[in-house]
Amino acid sequence: MFVRKRYSGEEIVVIDKESGEEIVIAVLRLEKREARIGIEAAKRFDIFRREVLDRKLVAETG
Image (cartoon, rainbow, N blue to C red):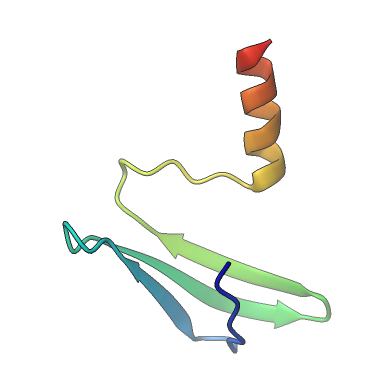
């Protein structure tokens, strides 16, 4: 896991080494113990919160 301290308005960029395609994760706002983030990625990527993905996988596997 990559852990990095970021401030409001800053971004982290994930780059696919093969295609050069980027996923941009931006810190939009920080309030108390909550961070609002934005994610920019190609439409071919599905983006889920972990708990939603876990429920989806359980439902699909029975």
